[in-house]
Image (cartoon, rainbow, N blue to C red):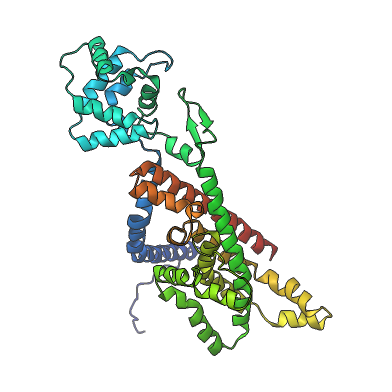
Length: 423
């Protein structure tokens, strides 16, 4: 009888016990893969956060922030907290105002305060600056003496509208910029009302911005759809060659293209010369520094943004669908509009959204080719940033553009989901 070596034997797991253990191991492997993928994309996410999300958040915060008055006239705001805004302000407000103005270290900071209050009521700039330059008006004054000194320096301190402006802006956070961007305002009692007919401006500017963008989008669809369809019917070699010509404007500066349009559209330009040579007109047609010139240049610049989404969708549509409809008795034109065109709606929607969103933010083209009545909302954002130096108002107008963009994108997402559900 021979002895056999005894080998350690692992007890068999009960039936079904290996399943949960294997599932746990697979879950760990999948989790490690996800973590590795997140680690690879982390630099990109950090870059987007620093360059896009942080500035965007700062834009939204600055649109409702009001630090100029609250940070400078803090004691005056506290003294006016219980004021009914109908009777004369309390004497303590005059003393607090003198104390706050005396605490301003630099003339530039006083200028910022004066400019902010002047946007609320005309004349506030000269009132604040003259009072600041006249300081000190006295030391150790009682509230009644401070009031007497201020009124003796400038009788306008007895007028309530200047105190209304200070009281209304004594809070660090304000909706005033956003309200102004849609032609609303807060009255002396804090109620939201519409501005007067002579003050309303941004409603017309918004309407002009959206109308120009809509016209440009429709023209891009009308011009881009047949061109994209023609490109989709060409052979791959010819289509690539033609696509280079479509993309050629991307390789040229926008300023260069606008300068070229100025040469073409001016009274003695090539376009007017051709129209008069062909006998279509007896005198030059005004094509420059008006709405027509702006639309022509914007369509030329934005047309590739419409062609590319349309072309990508059209290339994926099988051509035998239309042939099948024709073989079943449909007219070629009817087959095209009933069978082919509905399948290209996603490309039309994507291109139209891209062109429209890009259009509403245009600044250079209307500024150089348009007249005073053709400027879009971005022009006034630049105006408040560079000329008026009113960052709150500029950020409020930018927030309006951002809100419009998000609403359009939400409509596009809903339209795309509806198309997918129907498909």
